[in-house]
Length: 91
Image (tube, rainbow, N blue to C red):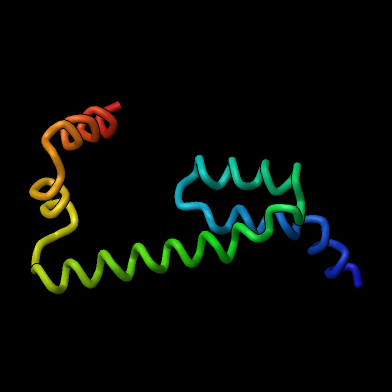
């Protein structure tokens, strides 16, 4: 029973935090989960479905073209987008 009680204390915030990608996402989702609790638990399956669709699509594109995602990004997107993300990555 003590374990169940402890799990209910960390429940929604831990589950929502687990869907994050990087440390910033982890902190933001943990705070959101702690403040909003179960109200945002729907974001877990929604986020998982979006990640599944993106990863599946990117993997299929890479297998079909033989190019990496970064190569495709550089070839398919306008030059200003590449410049923007280079600056973003440097910062």
